Image (cartoon, helix red, strand yellow):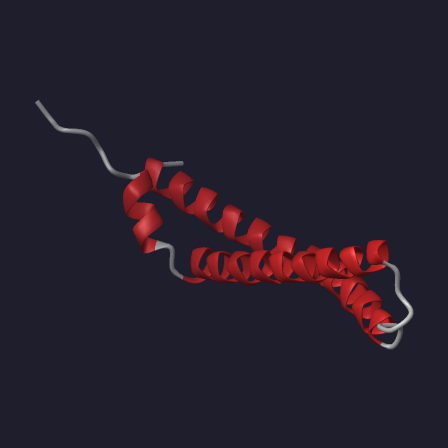
Length: 96
């Protein structure tokens, strides 16, 4: 196996890992969204602690969604193209 083949193997494996990571975010997002929708009907009868957890859950949904989106973009790029990363991995130093 040559250096170029190993570089493509690493790129594709990383892309596959990123796409699988997105699949693991989906159940978390469904659970968080369900919890958030359940709490929407109880807005008037909540204490300060519950309202604080409501805000925390909204932030968590946003961060999980952003992480899933970025992982999906990166994973698909690495699986389909990845030429820029390949050039960085196979870059050789100056020749003397």
